[in-house]
Image (cartoon, rainbow, N blue to C red):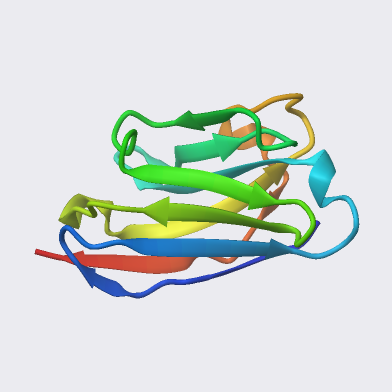
Length: 124
């Protein structure tokens, strides 16, 4: 399920932004989806994840209450709505797909397909 992402922009602190990731193929609904960004000590730190049918979501504590992950299986897309952005949210954001999770998970190595990344820059 090759992935392509869009939505990277500059935004002021306190602002909002939505990232989107589109998948090709007809098996999108069989994959748990996640968003990752670099974090101290790792090139791909977990940000948010969503289960196959969208019924379960999981967030890193750093974004809980500010970010919302969603998916549209009919359109093969996953979104990350980011509100109340902070300068420390500045990063390249990657969407990823995993066939190994029945629900949702945060292990990088469980995700087999990765998008090319979207740059998000939050100015103070």
